[in-house]
Length: 162
Image 1 (cartoon, rainbow, N blue to C red):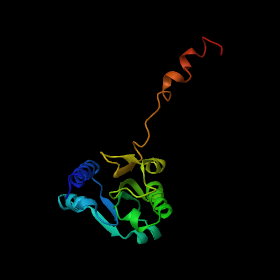
Image 2: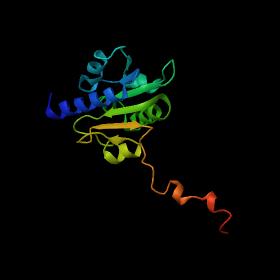
Image 3: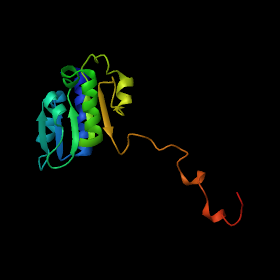
């Protein structure tokens, strides 16, 4: 295992430990075995379902509801055409999973450079642009103008005429 793979494995393990998902969809190969290593040490063990990229594209849904986490291995972007892989990422991100991790192979294939991943709403994790994540709770920072000091002040309604 190279230094980059060890670093990505450590980052993946840290995210899995922080999020602690109960239902994980693993599409394609397990990036550096991080999901299997994490799941082996968790009690109670999480539900981990493996699907091939083509099978996940056909039916990414979980019978009991949404997946807590969808992990797409590096072989997904190799196995599917760029547009179809993008649709799979979007479907998992929007409908079928609460969080998403996308591991890209080295070298990063054409069509999966940083601007394409950002366009899908993904955020880079770590260095090298080979690991991307989506979490609905923090995918967008709250802008400065979106706070009460820029909105109407009811305490001033009888004092000033606008």
